[in-house]
Length: 179
Image (tube, rainbow, N blue to C red; front, top):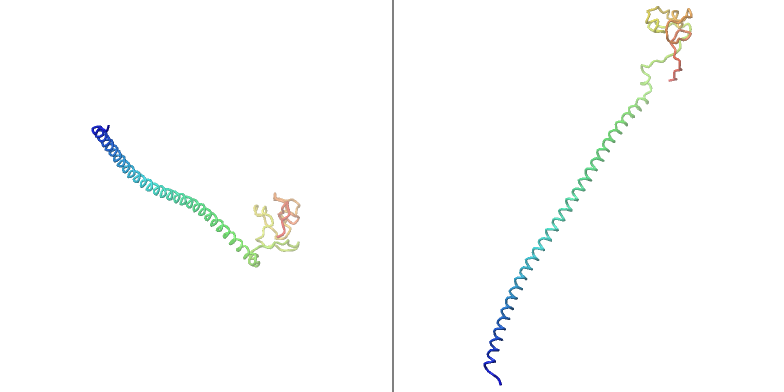
């Protein structure tokens, strides 16, 4: 029942099938090794790219921080300039006030060379360089150097177009303030 020829055919077929499977298995092992090497290469590239991405993100954050700091620095410089100008203005104002205070403290100095006007009495003799009415001065009229000007008031006729008192003195329509 057992034929040796048949078993040899099967053995050759099995051997050829085994050789074919062994070849395919070897080719698949080589393909797996190649794919593993390619995977390792891609993983190295991914690692390098992630490190590069981190560097770029850090540099971007650093640039953004520098930009924010530059903007803040500009704002602070503007504020500093405004405060310096305000300080200069206040210092000048303080110096002016100090000068005015010093002038007010020295009351004798403020009264020096100032005129103290008083109304002369009816019999007073006015100095020749005093002009009671500028109309008399403009017309070169002689003045009698008394408080009542003969040219302006003696005859009751006033030649000057300005308002005069009974004594011939030029008067204002409003009262002068007390100094």
